[in-house]
Figure (cartoon, rainbow, N blue to C red):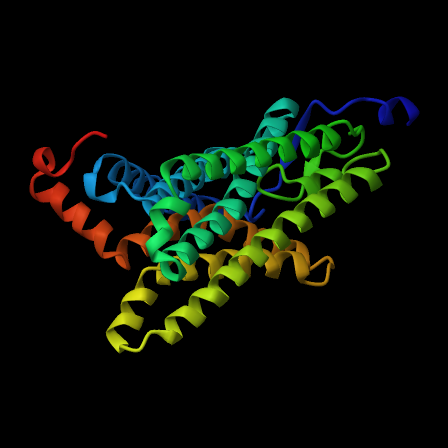
Length: 315
């Protein structure tokens, strides 16, 4: 037994969304459609906001990066997940698992921070419109995005290095459909107090600071909108941030449901469903929300369909 416990794990087995054999093929097609819509929607947003001359504003600059993040985070998870629906041995190798976990951490932190940056952008646009192009200049936009990526990269390096410095020498079955930190640490035969503390502190600090930024920004936005005398003016001001409010509500609501629910054996399945939502469903919904509720994006899409050569100018 001692020699068995000292044998290092070189691969893991992902249990997946469901272990029922009769659900594997139906789930494969469901998630294939979701991933296909995610790729199409986010690539569409990326292309439109990159080449349409009328979408070269800070708002669409941040939206483009959110679409890049959504596309990337979904692509980190979905292909392996879809493959596992079709095979009996749902194996993921040790370093493949490390890469998947690190990639997903990087992009989920990016998304949390980018939503806060987008809330700040809307705050400046509505509460200080005369200073908007000065406060949110192209240089400031690049700086904010660079800070987001730098922070998520450094946090990911710290968390991933602690998680994979643990010894995994017993069970290798991960009760999840991708390599996530908590179910992975549950398999460790080392003391996991330090990595769990680091994960809790970093996740808590990132989420709290992001949510505070969003709440403060939208509190001021709501107060500014209420001070507008004309109903048409209030409607126009609200329409500029309605899509972002919807995206923020869905995203943070899912995360809060996942992390604030009492932990029990039954909560593992709830965690899986919440994970499906913010890893695959939300990246699919975001471009739909921004496209269907945004006149500029719909107009850019119509220009592309009617006359792509004249409507789009490389920047």
